[in-house]
Image 1 (cartoon, helix red, strand yellow):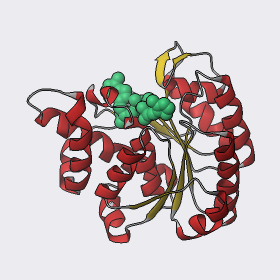
Image 2: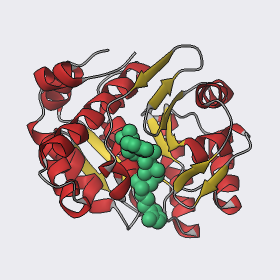
Image 3: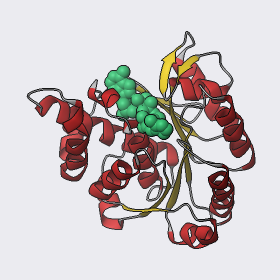
Image 4: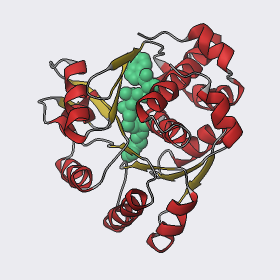
Length: 262
Ligand SMILES: Nc1ncnc2c1ncn2[C@@H]1O[C@H](COP(=O)(O)OP(=O)(O)O)[C@@H](O)[C@H]1O
Ligand SMILES: Cc1ncsc1CCOP(=O)(O)O
Ligand SMILES: [Mg+2]
């Protein structure tokens, strides 16, 4: 695990282009800005080429897209492939809404992506595995989480980060599990979006996307765990801001001390 990519990220201050959703855009921007990247958001198709050219990576969050945005996403991801900029996809609620699943499947069939990051319900839906997803949440299912993540990674020859109490990261062959966690992540809407955009920052500085995804996930999970353990009362409302603070404060020594993975 390349924990010192955290220092590389801060030295390079990569431009992380994010197509976000209106619900969590501020947490995403402030989270990755605090971490050491330079976020920029856009919904305008006419500036897509310029955005992609200047960015180090493109994170596409499918949390609340409109038809016009779908069009912009198509243009942005076409340019990202053309200019060889890594794409991270967050397939919000594709397990719960068939329209989203269809659009996301089309996108993945047409474009080369670096990383797909979703919860179990989202990853299962994209992998074509039976699962009862619940809205934006993972829901319930009986399948083996590692097998499902590997299946999707092989399908699109990309890295998959399947988040949950244990986060599973795979390139289709190798598997890394990250055990750092806190229940407060679930009480904060946008935890998943922030994780996806954090991965977006690291793929912008590390060309081995599997490595980049591991580092991003461990750093994000340790940051949340450190915050949760420091809180006298585990309160949802104050977890979010403190998570942003910790993404700024966290250093490689802290990550190495608390990281729990295999
Ligand atoms: N049951 C859980 N217990 C503890 N941490 C969790 C749990 N589920 C998810 N997390 C953490 O929350 C973050 C977001 O993951 P997740 O909730 O799966 O995404 P989403 O918000 O997209 O559904 C990850 O860092 C993950 O490790
Ligand atoms: C509530 C909601 N509705 C559409 S997108 C969104 C945010 C989802 O955020 P996350 O998947 O990170 O919990
Ligand atoms: Mg999500």
